[in-house]
Image (cartoon, rainbow, N blue to C red; front, top):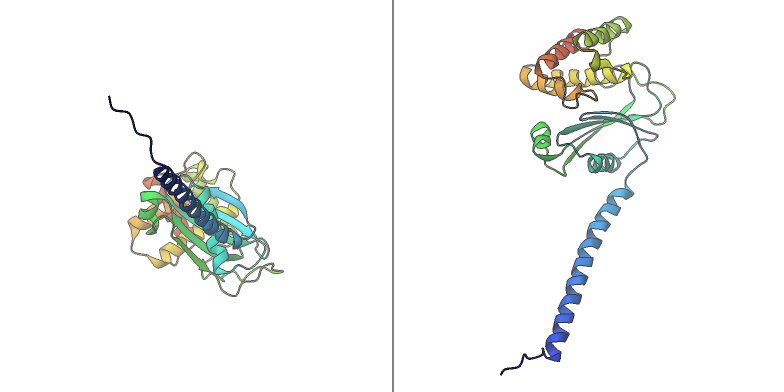
Amino acid sequence: MSQKRKPSTAVVVLSAVAGALTLVLFAGLIGGLLFSDDTELENLPAYTVVDQEGGHITVEVDQVLTADQVEAIGADLRSKQTRETGYIVTVNCSTGGSATVDNRLANVRFGIGTLGRARTGLDDGQIDAQLNQDRTCPASAPPAVNATGLPMPDKESWDAYIAALKEIDPAIVGTKDERALISRGRSQCDSVKNRPDDHSGLVESTNRRFTAPDYPDGFGEAKAEKILAVVRTYICPTY
């Protein structure tokens, strides 16, 4: 009757060494990942989310940002999102704005998942950050109305714009700060300016921008088309 042989001392030692090497390699990988995250966090400035609905996020900061800091905000926000879609982030200075115009420092885009890639053209992990030049933060005075190159409605057009949105669906306005709705309308005007003949694309981007808690994916194509018409009528009629 054959007896089961015990592993030799050499085999046991080699197994122990292999296990130790595996642990060292695994620890090194985890350390590398943590180091990468720490490096990213080193560039993360203090910021406050003041508005978020659907894929549109508005944040405020108290200083002029570098490109690395803007990208760090985008990365931090991306890590906190769970819904698969495209995201548009506006970064404003907490001072220097007014009731009719933000002191905007930067715009950021990123996407999550297949839908995010389709809506932004960016792969997971990619961040598109665009800085506005010659801005001050903190600021003692509002920026010029046309500093962004986008039109700003006067009081009469402002009121008519809000009323027209309510007529399409009261939930579009809801309890939002009207400045947020103006900001979204002006951002949509920027899309109109850059793609005036892409009607279907403009309807789609309008649907992404104008959302509500009960409508995180927008109000649908039919209402988005009406919202787009309201934007073009009251905010950028010359586009």
